[in-house]
Image (cartoon, rainbow, N blue to C red; front, side):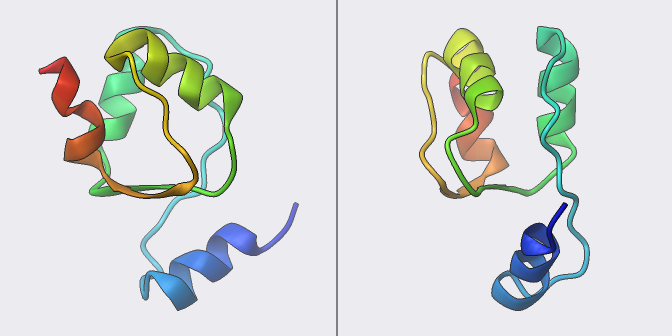
Length: 77
């Protein structure tokens, strides 16, 4: 409902090539497949479902910040 994700993408990450996503209610493999589509993951606030999935798959949760996708999923491979 706001322009925060687009603003962050354009002005802080200097790219218009970003996707805002909040729906992570999915099975394990589709979640991994979605993560692998991106180079970086930007977490703007404590996202309960994202952290529930990462806790389940990687035994780790993530604070708001910018993460390389390979750093997030490396514990699974």
